Length: 476
Image (cartoon, rainbow, N blue to C red; front, side, top):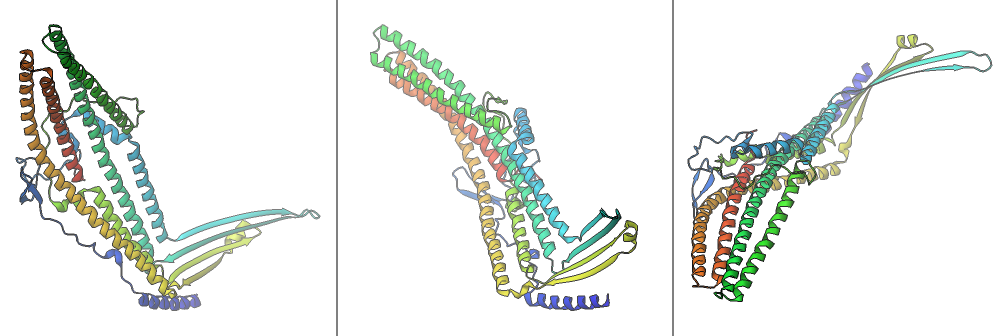
């Protein structure tokens, strides 16, 4: 034992000297690179120009700045129980989200598996044998028991770095799952509202077809009386055919969106989910945007990117310490005898110490460390791009909110004006002051105004959802 201790101390001294030559910088304890962030979000006026900035740009001027907290079940702020149930169903059964959860579990298992490298490896074994000679018929018995322990001394933190890298990757995978959850909520709501919009358009199309029929009947009656020409009849017939053709496109779009929603809910495409007959007309929720710096903690995709940056820092440590001296402590005990009782009473133990010196490959070590560093540097560049893209998404959503509100006011005025113009055009045709075409033109302008008004409502709903998603959803 004295000899083993002496050898151990000599090897340890040699290993420490080698480690000092290689350097002992701990990369994963370094702070992440600083990223320039604006202090506040931009406040946009109706013309699109930037006004003064506010520390808490909200979606409603009346919303107090202090209310920057978004609830975890933020989608309930739209006040639609049917949508709430659909989102709950999607979160429970969606296949993509289930696959993401499996990936999280697998990453956690891998992290736990890597963590076991910090503990000794113990093996136990035993066997017994019975033999009988053919001439003397003598029975021979033999038993043996053995055990071994293998322990790598983590003098340089390599095993700890491997554990940290695996743990950061598991955390990043969990953030990926959170991002998939956020995207699923947004997609479910978008499909739900799109179907409501299409139902509204189809109902409007039915009304337009009925109106086109009445128009054609009126023109035919006036043609029979000699008040209008055959050209007016042909134009009225074309108008009816156009409305019927447009209706088929709306119906096909609704069918495709229904199928997409069913698949999202882990159902066959033929299954029908609950859907609105038209777009909801409730007041839209106010979304407190908070501060730009909040995005780093709120958005799951940014959290995942940050965790992977930390994992890459740990990989630099792993690469560096891979070339440090490797010390392994081994111990074994074993015995054999004709009887198991004697075998257990006469054990033989051995103790050993192994040393590997990979630092001799200094050029290879330096090159591999530089490769790891370039991987980290590339990830830093991508992280900065991802962060600024996220900031841009919030700014775009805040600007779009203002423009969509202004558009809504103008669409309402345009619709009222189109209704008045269509009524006047009809009166002039009935009075014989014009042919059918001016009236048909005004009918089309009215249909366009109705569709544009509905589309603006859909866009405003999607804008609120986009803003929620850009901010990372609710508080975690």
